[in-house]
Length: 359
Image (cartoon, rainbow, N blue to C red):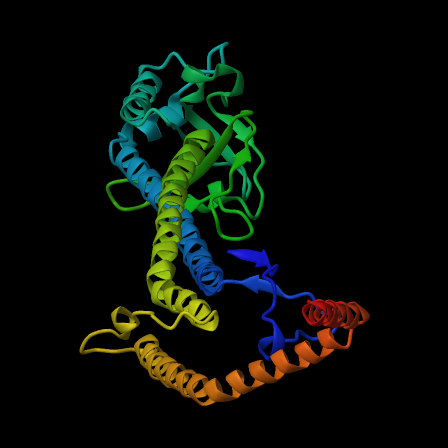
């Protein structure tokens, strides 16, 4: 609790003077402890959250990359390489940019079977072109699911020296950004995706072509966001629980101190009949128990001192009161009213005596 101090100061010698021109603000010890612990644990929790959030981001990307690798390896293992090479040598494109060759349909059906197992993956097969970094498209599953973005059968495309697709002829390769993360890009086919590539080998282990896969980028982000959201929710719940725990702990730690403060205020008002024993603790004491014990001793000494002072001051007070009475009597007797009253009484007394003599 934070409040401006409005309590009236003690009177007489007990008055405590604040610094001139400075308005005091009361900030309770529980509030100080609560704010301090909250700040410390917030900083610690924020650091842990940042680390976990980053770790989860990397973990989710690793999970996605492993899924892409498994899909691509499984697809490559199922390719009929001999049939593929024969199709490349003998197949002819039709008017639709595909091929009527049964071998083309077989290869397409295999890639489609993989897609049905992993619906977020679209696969394609390609071979090296006549010049370095150029590629020739052989089978493209986009022809089935997104015809507007397909590459035609035996279509030539110019590559570049930094092409992950070209590196796929020699090794497993991901399309990565400058930071080494999966590159979420809008490809030539116009859809948001991440990609990976690997070589296709014949029975002799020779790299004769390559197979690639595009994963739906929105699906990738759904995985990332779902994992990160779970982490955020977990930390939000943890932070609320920590907030409540700090509030409860700060109350438990400061309860006896606040009780001792209330007792001290009553003692300051002269009420010495206060029970400090519950605050002194049992066998195991802390600073609050020690302070309570000191207070108890101090109150007992102050009470005895006041009793001695009252006993010693009793006769003096009586003497002072008698002297005040005599002084007040003299003041009354010196007033004109009292003197006139005395003169009147004297005349009445004389008149009474004259009447007695006349009789």
